[in-house]
Image 1 (tube, rainbow, N blue to C red):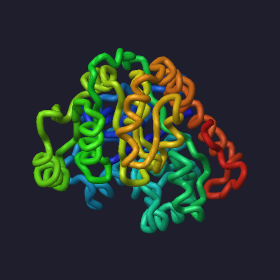
Image 2: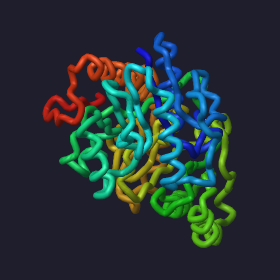
Image 3: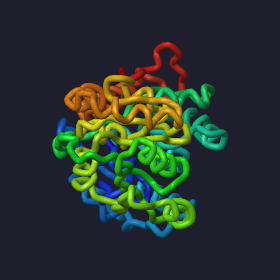
Length: 353
């Protein structure tokens, strides 16, 4: 197959630090190429993913993050360069609605954010002429009238992820500086559990900076070690030496990629049971899920779980190979017309096992 992939204009592929969607697309692109397919990637021109970048793309436009003008300009250039592909998998919000898509080429899109009312309006429209992929069953459940063609969980490349010993004696938190991510709750959990907390957070956008300065920084004390935003190697070291990874999210997160990253290092997850968490964490085997107020009492039990089982769960359920294979299966169905885009499949709805 000749596969076209589209990402947004704001973060390169792969990302240097934070960037969940871009990390997933990088894994897909590499996996497709390794399987012998030709990949054209419409991403910022300074992306370093080792596949062909669509000519004419602009460099990363982080200053335009989230703006319509930046995304639409990027999408127009992307589709201009994807006229001769067999299938397009678009990871932007606007792209699947673009008027000048190549005739006869199937377009699939992945829902990377929450399916709130406005997003549901968009994906119902997208589903009229394209295939819609959800990243968790919980995500799809928030708008059951959106025709979801497949549910495909994220996966990750494990080749560069070492299994840690968990001997650091601390807990860790990795995420964005946002109230939804549960950093404030993580601080309280670690203190109640009597354990040191190491914190690595993305803090670039103004609202992230304000939340950290106004809410988090005044709370920090000798029990917390703020290490800032880290690259992959430092992140995996941080996770791998932790007794447990704290993930007390306060919203229905569509898919917690950071949870499978922690599990890949052998570190069990302690978090709230909302969003996609129950689809990722096997309660009592790879971590513990509960209400926020219960989590401090679960930390010691989590620290005693089998770290090899945590790693094995990712190998078996969240590998890059599994994610790549499921996407290729869908692409083949779309190209051959076996899966009509935008048709609800009821009991045929594919769910990652």
